[in-house]
Amino acid sequence: MAQELKTTERQVPSKLDGSERTRSRPVFVPRTDIYETQDNVVLLVDMPGVASDGVDITLEKRTLAIRGYAADQQHENYGQVYAEYGAGDYERVFTLSEDIDRDGIEAAQKNGVLRLVLPKAAPAKARKIQLKMA
Amino acid sequence: MELPGIDQEDVDVSLTDRALTIKGEKKSEREESRKGYHVSERSYGSFYRSIPLPSGVDTDKANAEFKNGVLTVSLPKTREALSRGKKIEVKAN
Image (tube, rainbow over all chains, first blue to last red; front, side, top):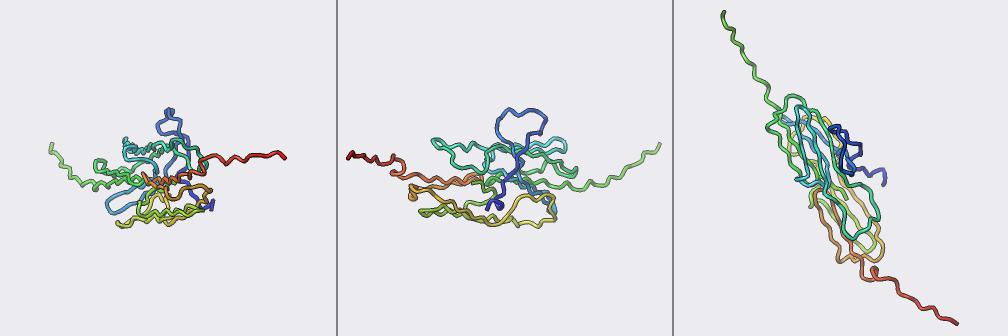
């Protein structure tokens, strides 16, 4: 049984923006699928415990940073008997290729999975350059 | 229990006097044609887990909640389990 269990994510020290973290919670790298369709590149990011208002996506130049802050799973008047996964935050950074239509990016969080749709940019139109006669 | 990407209807929680069983299936989303994968780390398929329970669980008052991909099952203890054991008087001969 134990080998069938697959943790949702692995834990790494934060190196997202080089600054120290001020929260004393574990940070996980969420498991992700990235696939391509005719028009889009789609990211599916597993972030269980994160509500839609706990997702923070930033795009700076070509760097796409995804952060998820999970709500606390502490229950009142309960003592923990057994734990198999830890509650924590999620961080992952991707570098995008240049041909993404940055204005058309869509994101939705449902059942603990973030779905990011990155539309491919239309191929740059060929431009004819007029020569001016001197 | 962390179950990201599963719909509430696809989770089945059942309870007997001895065990709590959670099973379900995570279906692949196939509404679009995929040209190719760049990263594939998430998994699909069915899962099954059965957790043996201690005695003194009030199965009638069990309660399950699924929120943001995390399933929470609450199993209240029975009144007998909450009260301290019965005291037995020791008689001298």
